[in-house]
Amino acid sequence: MEAEAILTTRNLTMRFGGLTAVSAFNAAIPRGSIVGLIGPNGAGKTTCFNMITGFYQPSEGQVHFKGRDITGTPPHKVCHSGIARTFQNIRLFGNGTVLENVMVGCHVRQATGWWQAVLGLPSSRKEARALMEKSRELLAVVDLGDLADEKAGALPYGAQRRLEIARALATEPAFLLLDEPAAGMNPNETQELMGFVRDIRRRFDLTILLIEHDMKVVMGICEHIWVLDYGVTIAEGCPEAIRANPKVIEAYLGEEAVGHA
Amino acid sequence: MQAQRTILNLLAAAVLGLFLWWAEGHLDGYKIQILNLIAVNIILALSLNLIYGFTGMFSLGHAGFMAIGAYVCSVLILDPAQKEMLFILEPAYTWVQQAQAPFFVAVMAGGLAAAFFGVLVGAPLLRLGDDYLGMATLGFAEIVRVLAINLPRVTNGALGFKGIPGHANLWWNYAWCVFTLFFVVRLVASNSGNVFKAIRDDESAAKAMGIDVFRHKLLSFSLGAFFAGVGGALLGSLVATIDPKMFNFVLTFNVLMIVVTGGLGSITGSVVAGVVITILLEWLRVVENPLFIGDWELPGIPGMRMVVFSLALICIILFRREGFMGKREFNWGWLLRSLGNKAGRHGS
Image 1: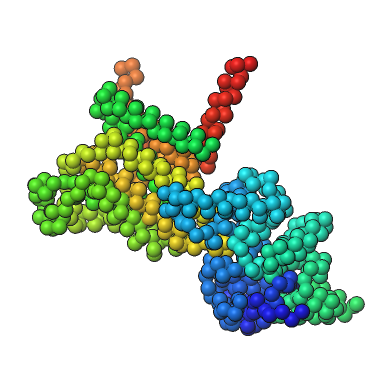
Image 2 (image 1 turned 60 degrees about the vertical axis):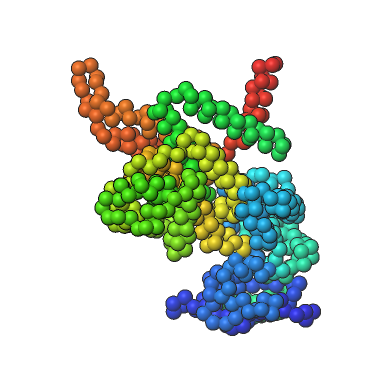
């Protein structure tokens, strides 16, 4: 399964003052895979996401995407290069409609600008219709087709998570980062989510990196897992290897539990 | 539906045209002046709503942009002989003395100059967050005012300009007003409008969606500045006299009051509040006159109007924070449906 890596990080390190949030994170993520990043609370998972997507400037190390160094590139340019993300605490454009949220995602691939829209040029009208069409299709994919004109902030929690994914897909990414997609979901919804993630990978030809606390999700869909604890990568490998790794069990359950086991 | 809406819009414009034509012949100068002020205030409110209501940038620099627009336009429409008489503190620079342009070009130049300054101050300031941006833009407006006082060879210092030609009649004002409305409606309805609102709602998420937040903020800010400049230019020609004192914070406050009352992020709200508040501001002059209750005389207090308005604003913020319209907009379909319903009920 050794496909070429779409994204590699080398010695990615983030220090906040004296605190090292992430130290020397090395990963090579094969194109087309679903991989996971796990670890206890405060292990530095989201910090890794923020460094990859340009929200943080890493203190050290590099991120390479499709063979290009994107370290320290601002977030909107990272997105333009084909990396999209969702947020741990859902961040929708709450006052906009569901459809408008997805259309904002389309903007990064839009060719016509504001003045063409004001002048009402045919090229601009045509593109606006195409974007609308594309957004509605994406909403159908995440099963929100009927709610297109609802206010995004008024959606139930699960629907908001799906909308955030649809919005990310609208930017036409090759690489998608999901920050705790199953948070707050019941076992049924979690089961559906797993099928959904596999489905969008196939459909949109994606590589997916996810942060998740729900071990059933992580072990169920990830082909490769990195485990962080206090910013240090303590293990990596396939789900079976991670499950059996004493260091991981220790990080999650505490030293005593391992001793007693 | 699209064609139907275009027809209805054209009809509305025609009705407005007929009304203006009627007003010109039948209303006295005072009422026409109020109609003119309504048009100018709507332009100003729409421009601030674009910046604050739609893009979420708390800007208090409107008076500054208006001053720039008003001065640039006035210099261009005053004729050289008039300027020779006006500049009594120090003679004007030759290029100020000789600058001349037709009214439309002068207003456009006023708007463009304001937009240019919008880019100039926006570039460093728009990196600031909410309250800090408010403070900084307020500072900018004050700087403009102080410069206007201290550049007598361009602005005639504290004396300002008198006898500015009154080209800004009903037709010009409402033409600019309709153009501004058209522009802002089209812009906000486009995907760029969605992007502005996205930045307002969540800047980080907007960045993650590939939006160059800074570029779009600067765009919205300078477009808003352009229309503020246009509004200032029309106002200068309308009131015939401008001086630095006129462009103080109260002017910004008036515009802000219209925008907040109408609803941040509602174009309809800005238009309706522009009409209502302009009329009220005039009508409330009554409270500044001496008031007789029986034999007892309550002396008139200058500035009482603003006290009443400030109280009204406080009440709006307390009880209806989203403003008169919230973020809702007028649309024809909605009007036709509600008319249809009423007709249906009458019929049955």
